Amino acid sequence: MNRELYWLWLTNIKGIGRKKIGSLISCFGSPEAVFSADEIILKEVTESIARFSEKDLEALIRSRDIDKIIRYSKRLNNEEINYLSLDHDLYPNALLNIYDSPYIIYYKGKLIEEDSIKIGIVGARRCSTYGKNVAEYFARRLSEHNVTIVSGMARGVDTAAHKGAIKGNGQTAAILGCGVNVCYPSENIYLMRNILKSGCVISEYPMDAAPVAGNFPQRNRIISGLCDGLLIVEATERSGSLITADSALEQGKDVFAVPGKIFDPLSDGTNRLIKMGAKPVSDIEDILEEYIDIKNRLNSKDIEREITRSMDEGEKIVYACIGIEPVQLDLIIRQIPMSIDELNFNLIKLEIKGFIEQLPNRYYVKKV
Amino acid sequence: MGVLFLDELPEFQKSVLEILRQPLEDGEVTISRVHATLTYPANFMLICSMNPCPCGFYPDVEKCTCTPPQIKRYLNKISGPLLDRIDLHVEASKVDYDDLSVHHIQESSKIIRERVMIAHSIQKERLKGSKAFFNSGLSSSQIQSYCQVEASGNELMREAFLKLGLSARAYHRILKVGRTIADLDDSEKIKDKHIAEAIQYRTLDRKYWSK
Image 1 (cartoon, rainbow over the protein chains, first blue to last red):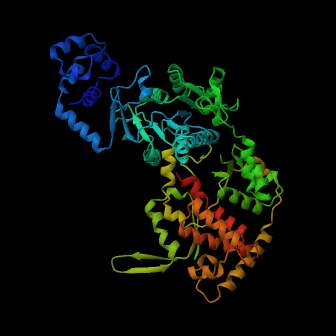
Image 2: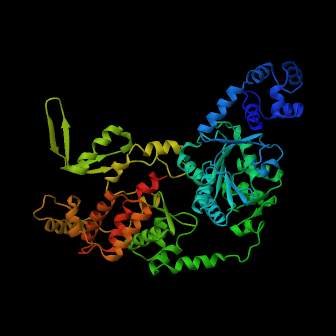
Image 3: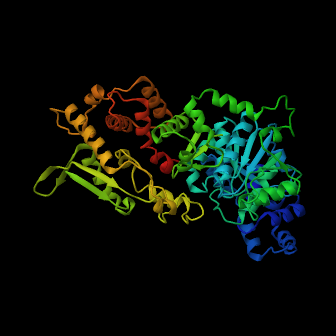
């Protein structure tokens, strides 16, 4: 059996988690040594390990079955799940450099390239339309510059970030709080498939592991661990993404935050991060300039001018009434001296051309 | 003949809703019993109403207590094929208190009725000698002859088809609705603004049912 299989064995014993594995390794030196250790010596050593019970020792001894381990690895193979222990050459360097690196990671798809710039994008699950659009915009534009986008595939900001990266034809990695063959949340099944087409899904949890609540703070340290910088898009005062921001700070990563309106509870967390030193960002250059030389900053006014050049008079007037916050149709009607027919006509033309998006209840918003 | 109004559409059993497909498409319904199979004409106008989610407050994030899977399950009770056969999708937005009390200047029902009568007579004249009375009954060859769209309208249709993911059935229905909108506007050719309006009446499925 090779080293990788010993790691696979050691990390898949019921009741024996990261801390106990850590203690075993520091006593015996390697997973092979634990595997072949004498039962009596094992008993002596494990008695001095905190919270290592009789049951744990039994489970450890019983699991030392080469056939069973090989069968398990074949099952992983059949599900196209790959695994890397921290001893493996291909184990991401970024994860080696964090305090409590996962002993083993499982992944499906194409593992992210070592030398690309990796930016994590996280935020509130119940984000606003603004948050969703900002996440997608940043992810898309950053991918166009060959940045890999890392996120957690959660509802809200994470989902928008992955979608943006896919639109930008870039690489994206989803770090899950469950087994890589489990899709959580389940409504992201299509997104997960799309992510796997060009990127990867990574987890430190074994095949079939359920998305238990306690897994997510642990998962967050891997998101921040893998990236060079972390962008928090929207976060309430008590948002889980602030935990990810904390991990990032501990790991010495750059933390970026999107400023928001001061009365919006969804920006309480992000605005506070900025007050504590996170870099406020309003465009991708604010992030990119930390890693590469920016030759020319694209003026946002120039981009606007480009867009409106392709519109006729009617479309321009209507487009001017629509901003980055959703606006209801009734409000637009009151602002422009246009008949409802003409207004509807211009709205649908703008929508088909991709400049605006229609939301439920006849709300309209600018498409970024 | 007549109008069938189904209130709270997702509350009906899915199997019951599926039975509507045949009459909506063919204008007749076939009933099989042990001793006989009978086909009856079933030419009705279907009007349905529904809420976007079980609690009724979606997309108001503050008030809606439904989880995304709950909303999805509720909306999926209306199958894609059934939704496709409904020509006009209209969203009734929340009524503001002001709207209830203020007197708005609108077209009177009388004037609107006159416009509808004119459109009726145009359609009667057009469909003289064929089975159908209204544009909804236009056959595909009749669509070819009567539903000519101006060049800019065709361009719009094509873009909408590609960007909004419309089905072939939706395409024909939009043309027919466009024809009626043009009739109401007393226009012989279907202009791009008529097509635009017709497309608008088909946006509900994209907003609520898409991924």
